[in-house]
Image (tube, rainbow, N blue to C red; front, side, top):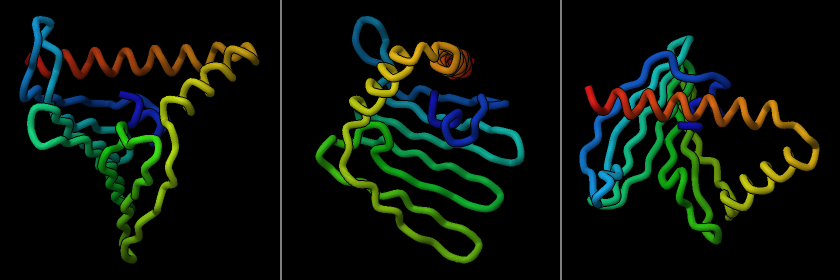
Length: 141
């Protein structure tokens, strides 16, 4: 839910989601695809699957550039990743060094706590909660 907000600085204007598989007694989503659109012709396409060949892929599309990343949310802390960027003048791969995304996020939250900057943190959490609810609602249609 946060990926589009982080990339575009806003919540999506439209959300589509299809759950492909659920599991367990609570019906947790095991595989789904989403298309989220944003202002100015920008979009995010995500495919996630735990009950198929593992898939965790994001595509960010704008009128000027396309960005692709595999294992966007689950890159192991000791593994590098690559972001593929394609524009009108060609493409390039941006190598991302190993990092622990969960540690980085926790450090960010602790930094907000230490400085008393609750406004930004809570605004982001509420925005992501609204997007998650919109994804769930779209999956039920």
